[in-house]
Image (cartoon, rainbow, N blue to C red):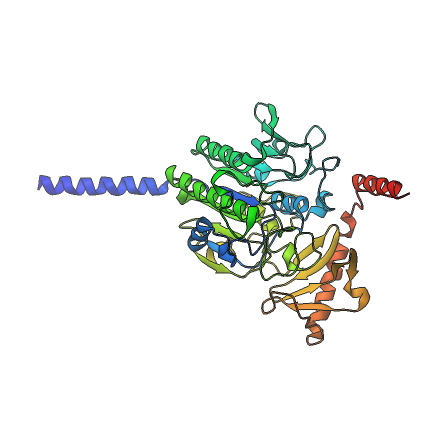
Length: 452
């Protein structure tokens, strides 16, 4: 009898302990966004590319691939602004082209960024390319919510180039010369160190690699590794290796079961790289090749593996991370992005009725789940507005991914609806237009004087 009583007491004790453990609140998940530069839809194997990317293949096999994910813009600066703020860049005043080294523009400190809205629950670090301004007393990412920054102010083809390391807590800022061949390795190395140092609290890491943007600087063993894809392919393989090392580190630190990793690109490919079956490239106006890019998300036990064709965008990242973190959206602020957590976790339909595509400050296309309406493109250095020419460009986005054949005449009601959507979007965002920035005005004036 005493033995039975002891056994019962032991079972009850174990049950109490288990109940107590299960009652402990689960720590919010960590977030890591791997944000590549100029990586195209067709540059990696999960999207049909030929460059070997075994680590991204595994990430895709274990995670979720989005086939219809749109970067927030077709160029770097407005795309990065859209991802970090959940708002189209026209609202921030930095939708026109990209910020150049002599440009005075920058992301306003009044904008709420992902690291800002995740405070104080999360500590945040940006490692890599910023490209949201580099002048004035508050341009550094540490003035925009990030606790730590190690990276470059803009693309690595812009001069002068230096690496900045800044800490929000101490206020220290250190600059060092940039070694082009080790840039991506150093970005990842500092991100890994940040993860190790903050393993015991929720963190947000923006690993903003400046590759495979031209020119390429493949590192060490990756030189000539891709054989048929040149230095561009070598750098893509190097990026894939960084992804593999990141997952190894998460497993080593036992963080792999409580971390959401997103892999994507800021826009389509530039002069090199592949947009796969999509039409046009980076900077193109209206067609998908400049906007539609890879998007793979990975979170074992939270995000099931599979594929979704729901239309989603970079502007959705902020509200979605707020959902996963159980934190409120920024108050008193109109977001363009929506929470896509249900798309990621349950393969639900997109919460978007439509996505708006900008070229600089102009609304140039509308995408719904089924249809795509394009009203602007470039031809021989000129901007062509199809509405003025009465060329109605309506594409079946599901069955004509190439955007090759307009079905406007076959679907007059859809065409009218899409034209109305385009007009309403233009009306909505017109008040935010700033026009040609002073930097570009000066460049034009200088070019005109040289011609005279």
